[in-house]
Image 1 (cartoon, one colour):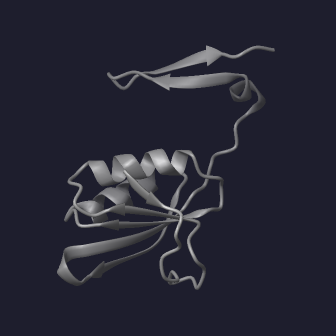
Image 2 (cartoon, rainbow, N blue to C red):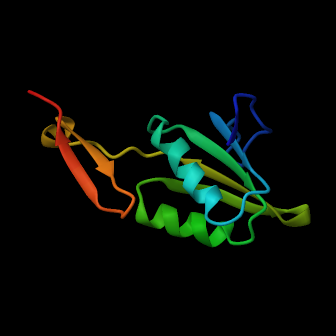
Length: 118
């Protein structure tokens, strides 16, 4: 996974994104899966610029943001089948009950909650 600390050119919002992920050359579903991992490590409000050559990326990113709290701020198709997506991370607020648990997702997709103490 290629992530970059170097800031790409300015986004359509006029701000530089906090993170950049180069997913060019990865095929579906890897761009959205790896983007999800990056977003899960980001702070709420930070932005991520993703570059992809996967032709299904637009549908994947729109569907992912519709199902999660993350926001698709902008997307554009660039020359030679390159796509750029600007996302804003929105980490949901955890309730006090959730704060004392951690979630584990199994390979079958089920979620297990583990009590962490207190």
